[in-house]
Image 1 (spheres, rainbow, N blue to C red):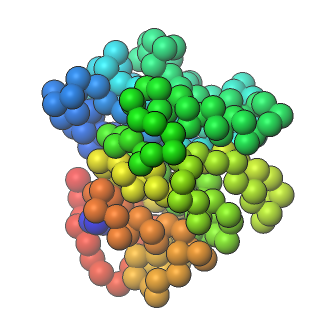
Image 2: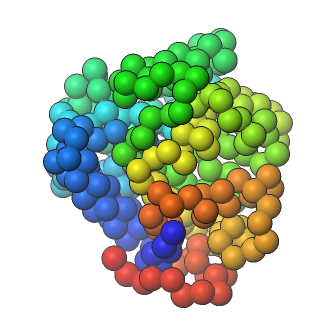
Length: 249
């Protein structure tokens, strides 16, 4: 795991976009397809806009998935799918057959999670109940409470070992969200984590340099995973780190 310190959120977005495009080219050259799990949030949005503006990815060879979704319809402003559609998918003219969204507008989120696991299985050739597929790249963020995807502190999804996707109760937010879980993340070929903003500085320092406590800081599980190639962080988020890490793109 490497920490790449960059000047600001725009530089994080640019550097992560370039790295994602590189991962896509490598996967397509080797396997003919690139399986990409998208994240929500402002920094990923900037990254998607960069990817779309540069046309750096051959969208006809990419299968697009999502790491988590709020219980809202796709047109809702809080929808992770809706954000990615506007910033990346529509500008690239992606064929709808390659877009695999989580249907969290449904009343039964447990069924939505099961169906999404089945969709992952169908596209990748894996089987539910068996080890998860090796997705090419999972994009993640980190909340100021240490959560990633919708794997929040002290929630049941943190201990899930059989399923790939679950509906996770989040009492702290009085909500439920559908999320991929760590067994799927940890099977990915690559994981990029994007963290920006001073509000996350203290938590990032704990996650990267503090005592191990993944129930309280779920993102710590990413630090031990060999597929996590980069934590891309801006100067504000890195301001409380003791170690220097790598600077620049």
